[in-house]
Amino acid sequence: MDQIRIAIAGIGNCASSLIQGIAYYRTLTETHPDSSLGLMHYDLGGYLPRDIKVVAAFDVDARKVNKPLNEAIFAKPNCTKIFFPTLPDNSVIVQMAEVHDGISPHMNDYPDDRRFIVSDEKPCDVVKVLKESGADMLINYLPVGSEIATKYYANACLEANVAFINCIPVFVASEDEWIKRFEERGIPLIGDDVKSQIGATIIHRALTKLFMDRGVKINHTYQLNVGGNTDFLNMLNHNRLKSKKISKTEAVKSQVAHNLTADDIHIGPSDYVPWMNDNKVCFLRIEGQGFGGIPMHLEMRLSVEDSPNSAGVVIDAIRCCKIAKDRGIGGLLISPSAYFMKHPKTQFSDEDAREMVEQFISGKRDR
Image 1 (cartoon, rainbow, N blue to C red):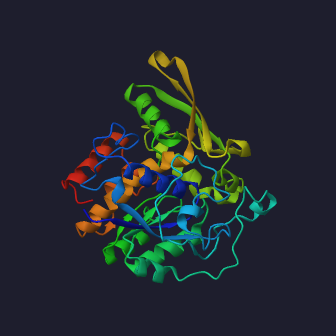
Image 2: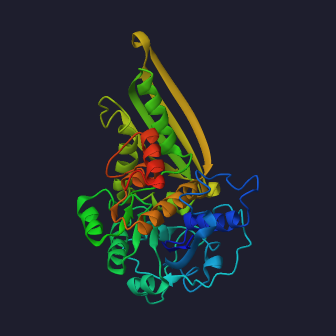
Image 3: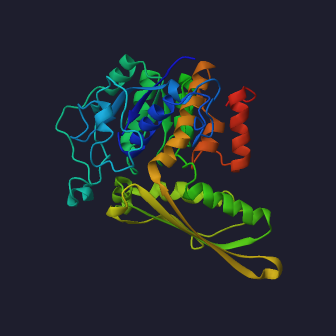
């Protein structure tokens, strides 16, 4: 199979985990007992993890800009676990991008090792870099709340004829105007806001669906998350959280068969705890009524390394996007968006979305 050539916007913890993972799985033969460990698909439509190659990278931090990608992914303020430190040589140099609204001003009040430090380099021409790199697609890993910056990259993809995978809660692939623009250009689009492999949202959705399937009415539920990476530091600015809260809340509410008021469901980050680094802890509670109206409740605590949890999904989204390009399919990819993202254009149960993705991979569905 051909290589899958990707560009990445935002060389943070998520990018670090994805790039380490690609290198890790590249060292394992198909017969190795761990070749499929942590993957939903080892072979996805003929594409293996080793077929993915990063050909362009964009960031704004002085410790990453103009650095080789293999060094930049380990630079501060990145703090995810390093599980594959010996990366193969890579000629990609991280390019300076436009900052726009990518950095919240409150981060200036925190130590250098925890916050972003803007480079004084001149921003590159993103469209030119995308075209010259031959990128098939761009993965958007910008900080939550980067509305203007995300749409800047989406526009760049349209101009450069590059597919767009939007991993953050800025609504592009769930908005009719953007969907139409990608459809008219015949460019694949996946989004918005990636679900982690075994994360707070996917578990909350699964438990909510279980309550519904077993005839238990949900009266109240909450999901509180704490962590110590730059994502949690960034989200201390609640002005950046509007789309994030909508995305996570709708992902769960879509699985409830009856009405839940805004007072009955609370989902969102809770606090930033620096020493936790990239570890994320979720506290989840569901209160309901079962047989005879008898009350019950469920409480759960989940602890995960946040960024590798995300990479386990994005590595499949990338390969689905390449399949679409190979088949000449443009516009919104409904099935991958429904299964891999929290805020797709149309919500489905995870069981149905998974089956839709399998049909898309096999060619039984064109989107």
